[in-house]
Amino acid sequence: MKPLEHYIEVGQQRLRCGCTTGTCAAAAARAAATLLLTGTAPGAVLVDTPAGLTVEVEVEASQLHTDEAVCAVTKDAGDDPDVTDGLHIVAAVRRDPSGFSVHGGDGVGRVTRPGLDQPPGAAAINSVPRRMILEQLRIAAGEAGYAGGLSATISVPEGARVAAKTFNPRLGIVGGVSILGTTGLVRPMSEEALIASIHAELNLHKSEGETDLLLTPGSYGAAFCRDVLRLETERAVQCSNYIGAALDHAALLGYRSVLLVGHAGKLIKVAAGVMNTHSRTADARLETLAAHAALSGADRSLVRSVMDSATTDAALDCLLCADLLRPTMDSLTAALEERLRSRGGEGLQVEAILFNHRHGLLGRTRGADVLLARHRKER
Image 1 (cartoon, rainbow, N blue to C red):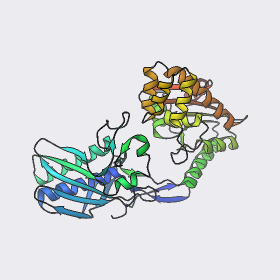
Image 2: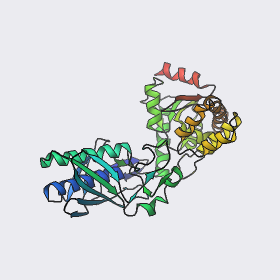
Image 3: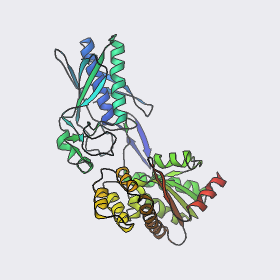
Image 4: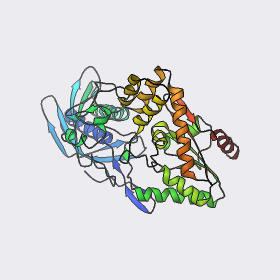
């Protein structure tokens, strides 16, 4: 596959982006559909990604059969240490008079638990990649003047082997990898460079006279700040998984306060003392929720349901059904407050607001409203 020549600056490094499995699957489907309808396999296809970047993806292998065309591309993760890097993503496309559809084949995982992007029994091809694949099938049909439907089956020949190195087994996704990607691009991760870039941004804001920091782990937190809390987010700092490193540097620089706004999936880990929330470092979300549910009166059966949940959202749904969501989140938020204040030390006030998309605002530390009002006034 021709390397994607798109780079981002992370700290003092210039890192190359890659294509998600979703983009690769969409490209393979486009190529196979073109081969099926025209008899000619393209050497490469252009795919518009949700990130707004059009990428050129080379087609590695093509086969035309009587009623089916098969094309493959190779996953290129750029400078990101992604276990799916180098895998072949294969699409087999057939004519289908009933319409356009996407299916999972060998090496693509199958969902077995509720609470994920796809329902139990479905192939682990997430919503955004499904839309991308369908869009590419329709483009190929339009270019060929074909008025019928097309069916694409995505497979990953080495997917079952590689899946053992991912979190899929823990999530209840069996038999292969997931076809993922909300932006279509893989943004490379370099821990040292990312922390350096966070430090540089904190230095900049402090040098410009700011003393109260609005901190979010990522785009979910920034969107919640903007759309729900009605805060201006232009000067909010995104710290990714490195919450502890950001708080340490804020304290070192002499910030007065930090208001941390984050998705429950991140901040539940922080309540357990996990200050680097990357899944490769630790994942204590369900254990932490189960412990606080027990402290809030959950019986053994409910604690087991929380522990067996595939996702944080599913665990929270269990608590809501048992009318224990609020007391559990109160208990967890109190633990979160202790962890943050301990990390911030005497000179830095650290408060937090946590949420998720299904239930909205889930908790806030005791001083969060004061900092929230301060940010609203200043911005």
